[in-house]
Length: 320
Image 1 (spheres, rainbow, N blue to C red):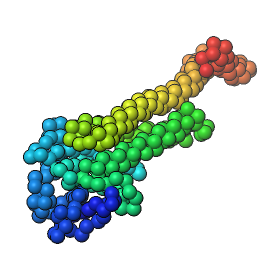
Image 2: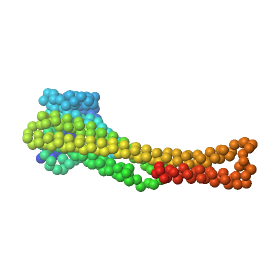
Image 3: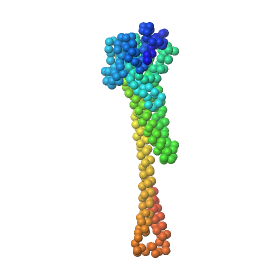
């Protein structure tokens, strides 16, 4: 599908198709294009556009290059960032003169909000270069919003870990299982955002040599600075989620050790009475206590005392 936009008084205007509007169009957005649509855009732009296989190349030289006077840039952008499992896919930006082509196979939110805003407000969309800069600014803002949400979620997880409200051990165990899953999802989301920001940092570094004009270069520098600061913040959040993961595992170990401690204490406390009961349960013919009138109460008292003594000793030593 091709979405074409022309420029009118520094605002975007939707154009229905390429035919008859080739000279007006400043931005062509390709979403899952067919081969026929790719050929039509290549004819309009005057240069070839990258295929999906080329977009997925991981080498920097395959993602950032200039050819026939056009600049080709590919970045990894997330979609469906409302949840913890975003769709990460490459988006290619082709800047040829005053024309811009974007090629994508998913729906980042910026490609929905930016055109709608640029149609209603004058944000300086005069050509493909300014459109690209405005679009990248919206992308960076969107990633900042995602990181802000992740930061709030991590703070909530921290409170749940270090200030649990559940007093029942079984419920705390279920909460720890859920917390581990939540922490894993937050770490995955943060890692994906870091990858996206890393690709945008490389893109802005390349774009600085492609744009013309002092204002455009200043905007590119601002974008690069924003991407760098967000990448640092994403690294901080990643470290924090790692700390929370270690803390959660430590809390689980403490819970397990407490259970094992109780079981061990019970085994030690009941071991002496078991020994006494085993002795008097032996089938020997000569056992003086068997004929003694107070033999049964004596055995019971002996078992109770043998259980109380280790319990008292452990409490005195502070072992539980």
